[in-house]
Length: 544
Image (cartoon, rainbow, N blue to C red; front, top):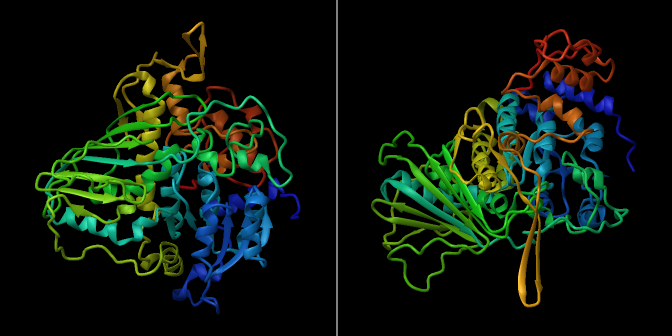
């Protein structure tokens, strides 16, 4: 077992990374600088390997898998056995502390809520990152990873593998060539969830298995007692750890919509679902997004468009002209583009696109054809010089803004109790029309009984909370103590000026010495340059 991680050591390395002092392995520097490794292989660390991560690693086996981390060693045992030379860990921070200098790249396939912090730590150390979908748990985290990846010029890829496939290229090229005309409405759906959702928090606690690092699984989320219903796979159905069917599948199904229609930030959003519980995602939900008009393309205009999402068995109305008996569901879902000239339908991953008219468009190729796998296309990008790199098919420059759309749908569902269409300011990451005094509450328990043949309904609700504060927490999580301290280094609020007290706390976390907040009066103006001492880390250094 690896030695206990030194917090100060980890933070010290994080500080060096934030100011560009990280050690850069030879393969990162590239051929341009004459530092290509003899093997020409990447040294890769894998974080979250028992489930989807195992499949991703198989796609990377031509490279050097040097370190593996999973919080559940029983679940991950088959992967450890597959790569016996790789060092084993159950906490990514310990692995980074010991091995990040030796690595070129990191693969992240943990539960949704830990994607951002693991990826951000790697990026600020100058490492290339492959991260499974959804890219992040929140809008803020998506924005942050987008900015960090651009600043540090690393190669990135989100694990929505359809982005590298033929279907997405066809959908985009048909739309851009004007084959279906202007699109003002899109409907998309999935047949998931196929894991439990609509659950209340279990009342019985269980003993944590010896093979599971429960604290590391919880990560930045609020601590709760262990129960086997949460992990390994069922995390997707719990708000604290996952994003439900929308987060899991919209990253596949809505990608050709986002890319083909050149979408950005939505301006309006509204969600609805079956019973909304405080702990778990609903069994079925719908979301309506409204996107403003975009710049017209040479062969087609891009007017305002409404995008509708359905899951949990809910389906859009069948398009007019679609043959009876033809299944809209291909590989777990589909999308319907209603154009002024024709209707385009594709399956999950953009698979098997066709026009309802039966016409087969012949369009000139526009997009790059990915001839290798989604994973190996990322490896190619990693090995290219940053200044001359051809971006991967789902580089964070695209995947980040796209993932904001996906988790915005989650926000809409969780805020449905406001009973209004929500207006979104994408640049500032805030809702603009939630009344200052609005409150919101959510069902904790849904009680039901029959007495003397009569049904009795009894719901237990959370206390009402300010709706704007609730929304802000969903947009940018407040990490739990112990994780918050090192996250503050990278996850400082770069979009809203921190308070003096907040800056002092960041300085304390970074330097691990004096209590600088003792010298700062509440309400005082931040002294950006005078709070940090010890290791001479300064607020002048902006990780973004």
